[in-house]
Image (tube, rainbow, N blue to C red; front, side, top):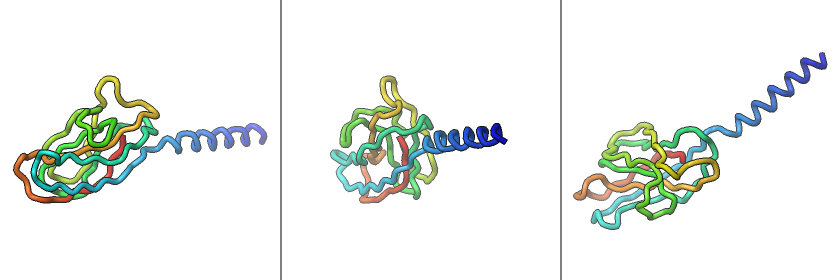
Length: 129
């Protein structure tokens, strides 16, 4: 009986530890207005709390948009690859560039229209560093 209680306690602790490392999803909502120059939008920074893959998941189809993670809002410094011409909903993985990522790192999602000539549009969804 004592062995069983110890085993149940051990499993409960594992569930708490690994359950708290679940993927964190933040929401984003960008409104793009012409001209192309100055159209970069960013979220606030979020800490990396899991070793799960970084991703962006636009919730609707929209004008082609490019996304990347950056260490500073409004910066063109990319901490991940830039995924371009995303015009449909669905999750896309982001790959960290050398020197970025890791637990405790703070990053933001940045996006910009993939086309230089565009009209006003909105895009929203979720993302995780």
